[in-house]
Image (tube, rainbow, N blue to C red; front, side, top):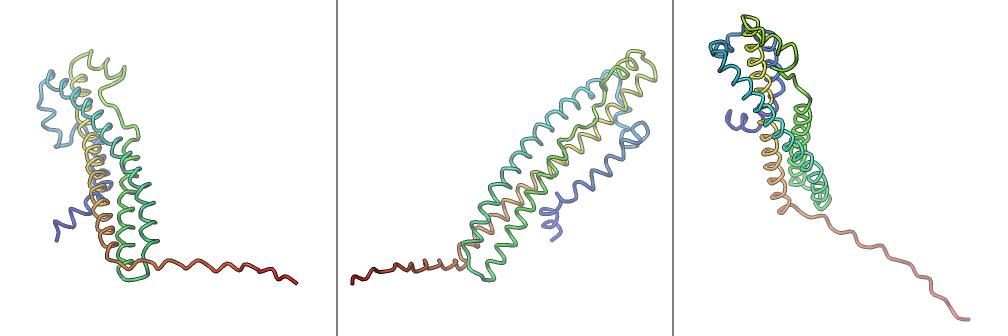
Length: 207
């Protein structure tokens, strides 16, 4: 049961998890999770900063595509859902179908919200004149700047990865719920078509 709950609802925990992760930015130079970064030599840490910058761009592109897919799913799914509901007669099955479609649209909407939030500009570490001057000067200051840039990228990219993972989970959940609702609609009583109203045509009487 816990596995099923995790499978369906982990995506809704992503914003709360990311808030805790972002707090690590306040202790880039001392947090124990960055011990591996501090153990790298200067050449390796420069390569690490470059690789994390490349990874950040790839994650942003992936999240952008997922957000576009969620926006389309929400628009098309809403129109199809209304058609399905309008074609069903009042019954317990219709209520279940309505609930499933509502949950499906909620997944798509929440996924789109996460996607748009994730597309907001994030801090760019290892960049700018100040960073370049500190690194060029060498010494402890350069090493500290490189450590903070690498740690900062690691934190922000972990947030990006969580947002992309949540968007994928919400697309999956939305599709599953939508498919279940559609399958149930096939066995639900259909709405009785309304008979067209009788049209009164006056007759002319000849005198």
